[in-house]
Amino acid sequence: MSGPKVSVYSLTPAARTNLDGQRRCDRQSFECAKQIRNMLVELQKALDESEQLSVNLELSGSQAGTAALQNTVQWRKDREQYCALMTGLTPNPSNQYTVSEEALAQKQSLLARLQQLKAAVHHIRQECDKQTEAMRADNPTAQNRIRAKIAEGVAGVSETDWLVQETETTALKTALTEELNGYLSDRHLSGTLHSEIRGLCESLVHISDLPHLKSFSSITGERIRREVQSCLELREAYEEAELRYAALCEMAGETVQPLPITADGLKKIREECQRIETAMVQQQIQGYISASVDEVMSDMGYDLIGTRNVRKKSGKHFENRLFTFREGCAVNVTFSSEGQIALELGGIVREDRIPSDEETAALTQEMETFCGEFAEFERRLLAKGIVVGDRISLLPPSPAYASVININDYDLSADAQFSEMQQRRQTDKSRKKSYISEE
Image 1 (cartoon, rainbow, N blue to C red):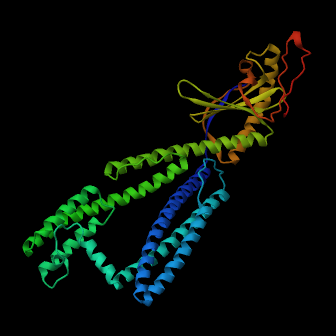
Image 2: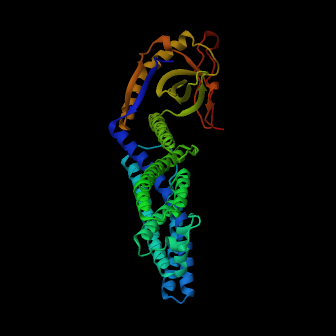
Image 3: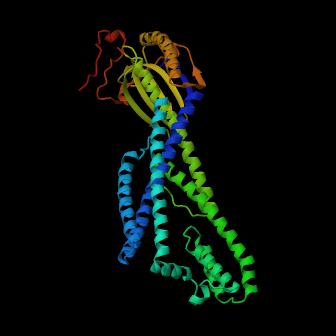
């Protein structure tokens, strides 16, 4: 083959900024889509509760119940519409990017539409929650359920122990009881913290004098409040990282691995996000460069006729793509797993051999032509935002690099058309060219 031209290509700052912007839009779109799906599920539950309370009020003769039921019916219709919209707005994972302002604008537009939909779902949920709270306040049955929930977990406590009374002692005990039971109803707190709070509820039942209650509030209560705050902050950070992790896994085609909601779990999930994103950046850049090489070769009149993949025992992976050059010759483009791209010219044959002296001379002449073509090749890559990051070798034409390519080692395209190099030996000068035509 001709003097190997081996390089590591990279993106110009402008192209990298464009590609980073597209990838960021994609990730945010996946995150937003996941949030919307979760919000729609939770909205369905909220609407079910709102409808039940509306029916109860309506049965009691309250006009407020009728109005609330009408609102709930309309919100259900809105939710169904939003579910239908999500079908058309769901982003699709792809590692193929085109560096252009138009491509970036399309991704920005999708993200903006998802964010608008998210805001609309959030608004309905807020209105539904407001209505539900208002109906609970107007519904004696609902109030009784709330009281029962507040008292839940406090073993042996009587109603008079937690109802709001005029005395400071009872008022403080009621406030502490409601605070602790409020923590118990928070699903975001850890199981360990829930167990500790249940034990404190049981201890609180047996405290009846004001000094001990004040001590409980200032010492034990403050400690629990700090632990609750710390737990909620951890949960918030974890959920944010988990959302990003799930989006990246969906984009990369990986399976989400469940991790505990702990400091170590948060650290691990952030590490996974970094790993996936780093790999994706490399894959997307190399994917864009690879696709651009194919486009430039095609634009310059070189047709792709065959490919092959080689994996060494060391684990290194190479992909070869064979393009027609001139009659009987081809350009072999090799992509390595390390990001190197090599372009070499060779004669097309159907056996493993070395070229004859006459073939070597002919191939050396073709190398001269290919050198000029290579300069044009890199100029066209630059127009696509691709530059040489590291030049490994750029060897001149030389008989030492003359070689032939065994076409049988490649997976040929169904419509591949090419001519084989004539085997220029004295014994078979009259050998005719053979062609592979579209079958």
